[in-house]
Length: 253
View 1: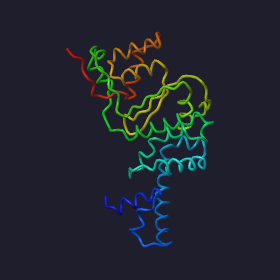
View 2: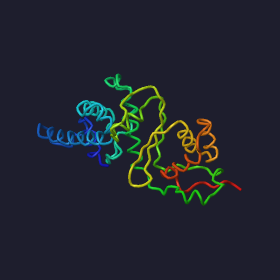
View 3: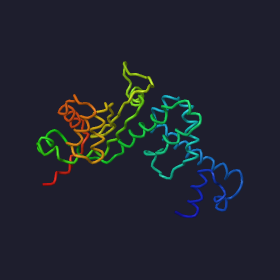
View 4: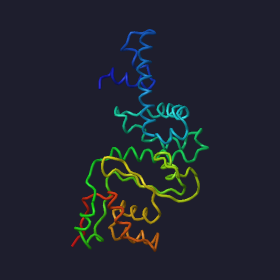
């Protein structure tokens, strides 16, 4: 990057001092820089709104873009690709004063971010029922690997239900924010991002897999969470959903 380009990049973020030696002074130059700054700002605001659509839907477009402008000023980012822009937005919202009366907003932003990360995650073949059947009884001692797109959450509040109700509207969706534990799985085994709520047993199983445990250990953790759990049904549903990576680690002899 040349000295001029470095100075121009800083000017887009609001610091004009280093740029003036490279330009003719006057209102015309200042106006031209302002056009570029406004374009850069709009691009970041549009990207943030696209990457956090549930947050924008909940608070409204005007509130969102006003908050987003403050975030962009504080965290302009240096990646020219806007598809992943706004990685720190949920943490920023947690400390944003006007969002103080909206305790669900930062968790909702985390789930919006998970959707983006799942969408951008590397492609990989998911473990299918035939793969699992081929391993046979040895599967219990096999180290589980989650699909690279998997994002896993557990909340002590109904953040997943609230997020799902806005992201995937249904007639019977609940829009209540209450103290009730819920998990959420977000992943993309194929072309489309999927999301589903998880009970404690399902989450315990997947959390053990995320930590690199064997399928047998994961099953034990799920059974602790729900002694009456049908493990065969749980595993079948997860495999069918494409949650696991096809390249599992075989047990040692």
